Image (cartoon, rainbow, N blue to C red):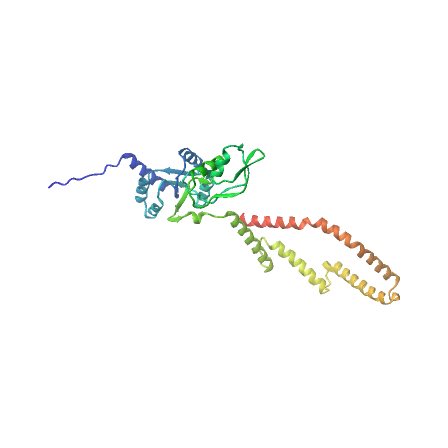
Length: 341
């Protein structure tokens, strides 16, 4: 009894395609699996050109891509589960977060097609349109858009959600949204997963809110600075503030404890003068003869100065109002500079 042996013939171009993918995997430290569904060929070619110098986009049949992954190291084989309909591979030397951001920024708005699922609530805003009165009114109303004529133009009377997230978009609504230049879809390379050094990163991990993180870093720097100052912990960033604070506190202590030091003698003499005038004023109010003419003149001069002081103080406050803000801003920028280099 004879046996028939059937050998599967694999075309050479398929072998070369598999080898090309394997070489790219070896060449780059990072690669990702991206979805390319719904992207017109012309737009896909533009995306490929835009990525030049930063990343390499490789489009191949899923069967060939899976074979290349299966013939690679074990940690690479785990990326097979992300191979689905209309898939491509992207190779780069960027880190996963930069790659995710790059691909997200490359996405662009696109019209929605009839029968497509609304990716989110589709809102039509109230306001005038560029359409003249005519059959367009009925077409818009038939699509669920509240339209009317106002001032010789077609207007949308109220803001309305014409389709909820997850709903199927009708032919009428899809056509009208396109005419209104409302593009609910977002077309681009949809990153499914990235492999780097054996670790798989999915979009949920890579979607970083940079503004929030920057705010958190800024707040942390401010709190660390305040803690350093309040705990008297000297650092390069806080030492100037700590020295200024120590000088102020030691000066106040010297004045309140009446420590006779050259640096505070002017403040001590001023304090003594003020206390002397206060005693003289109290004595004079009880008995005018209790103080001599020199003291009376001094009390009169002090009273005149006190009357004029509020106006002068107000002008000084107005002149200095902006200074703390400038100092605070400069201090904040200096803190950020020290934090981020």
